[in-house]
Image (cartoon, rainbow, N blue to C red; front, side, top):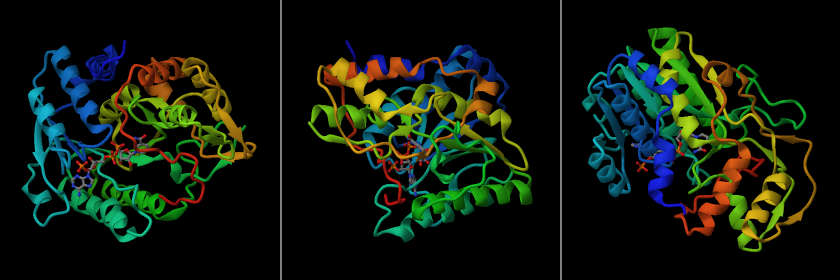
Length: 338
Ligand SMILES: NC(=O)c1ccc[n+]([C@@H]2O[C@H](COP(=O)([O-])OP(=O)(O)OC[C@H]3O[C@@H](n4cnc5c(N)ncnc54)[C@H](OP(=O)(O)O)[C@@H]3O)[C@@H](O)[C@H]2O)c1
C-alpha cells in the first residue's frame, strides 16, 4: 500500500555515494526556489545525507513558499526556511554569503500571455544571484528542452550538443544558463548547468500524465511518441553531488533516464497495471526532445529505479488513491507554448 510516508522515504533516503560525497562538500547549502515540485524532497535528501554522514551542515530552503505548509513541514524536519520573493528589492542582498547554491527558481507554466514575467524570473533573477554569489559553487537547474528535437533513433542530444530553444520558456531558460556561464567566465564562479528531462515522483510527471489520460478515457496522441524520464530521487541526488563538479568555465550535464521511452510502450504497461487499455491516435513523429545522459551515469552511476519499476509504482500510486498535483508536464508540446 502506498502512502505519502513511503513515497517520501524512497525519495529522501540517501545512497552510499551521496553520503560519501556530502562529506566532501564544504560549507552550507542554500536551495533557491525550493518550494516547488522537486525542492522539498531535495532539501530533505540533503539533510538526511548529512545525518547519515554524521556531519553538521545547514540546509536552507529559500522560496516564496506560496504554499506555506511546505515551509512548515520542512521546518519540522530540521530544514531552515526563508520565505521571500527573490525578485523583491533587496531580497538577494539580505541573504548571507554561502559556499553552495542549488538554484531551482523558474517560471514555465503561464508563460503564454505573460512572457515578460518568465524572462524576468528566468534571466533577470539569475543576474542578481550571479552578482551576489560570485564566490559560491552553483548548480543551476535548467531544461533538456533547450536542444532541438532529434531523430528518435539518434540516442539523444549530448551535453555539449548545440542548443536551439523554441519559445519564450526555452529561450529564457537558455538565458538563465548564459548568465551563470558569464559568472563562471567573468567572476570565476564555479557553475554546473543541470539540464533535466522530466522527473518522476508519482504525484506528477509524464507517467502520471499518461496514467490519468488512460483512467479518464482520454485519447493519447502519439505524435510526440517518445520521451525521457528519471526517478526524482536520483535526479535530486545528482543535483547535490554535482556541487563537487561545478567549475569555471561552467560544466554542462544532462540528467535523465537511460531509455528512449516509447509512449505506446509506457501507456500499454500502465494500462495493464491499471486494468484499462489506453486509446491512441496518430502515429509517432520521427523526432522528439531526447537527451543522452551517458556522462551523468559515468560520473554517478545508473539510476537505482528502473523504468518498469517506475511504471508499476505510478499505477499502484494512483490505484491506492495517492495525491496528484494535477500539474501536467505538457511533454507533448512541440511549439514551445507553455
Ligand atoms: N520537474 C521537472 O521534471 C523538471 C524538468 C525540467 C526542468 N526542471 C527545472 O528544475 C527546477 C525545479 O523543478 P520544479 O519542478 O521543482 O520547479 P517548480 O515546481 O516550478 O518550482 C520552482 C520554485 O521556484 C520558486 N520561485 C519562482 N520564482 C521565485 C521568486 N521570485 N522568489 C522565490 N521563489 C521563486 C517557486 O515558488 P513557490 O515557492 O511560491 O512555489 C517554486 O517553488 C526548475 O528550474 C524547473 O524549470 C524541472
